[in-house]
Amino acid sequence: MMAELEIKKFDLWMAKDLSELSKNEQNRAFLPDEVFETEADARAAIELFIERYRSGLSPQVYALVERDTGRLIGHVEAVMLRDGSWEIGFHIGESFRGRGYARKGLAMFIPFITDRLGIDELWGICLEENIGSCRVLEGCGFELRFCGEGIYQGKSRKIRKYRKTGR
Image (tube, rainbow, N blue to C red; front, side, top):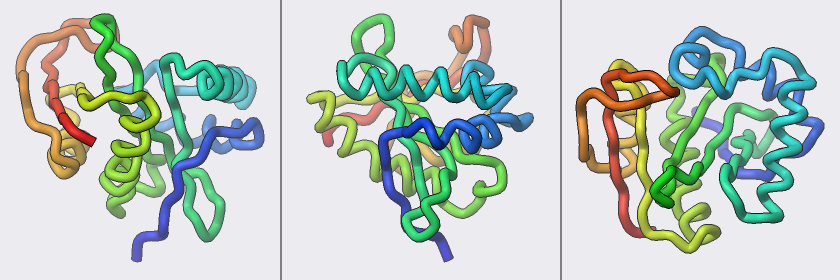
């Protein structure tokens, strides 16, 4: 059975768990800029997240937490793109994957972040080979708008761009 989830603001006490959740091969392959090698690296990132909650600027990164245990299982985020639109992202720790948490967490986050930012459109961009992320985006109502070569993490790669409108 899947645990109930909550979306919470990151707090500094989560730094050790964030660092541990980020250090796995899949995260290194698909989200290398979200790997925090040390607790200090994760703490610095969380300090930025906390500042961005106050300012409303990008990125807006929130913790996904199991309601009953208070355990950090991953995060969801919205990041402003160069054209002023917003991209959504998510990461679930390796030991929590395969339980539907990504889809559930993202489905909870979409109305939360679109209301917070006052927007009606989100993009989901992932590597074409990241089948799990493609399925999560499609399961949350994102429509495939582009499939082909594009820039991802500063390199030309095969990507998929999904779009969702409405809150």
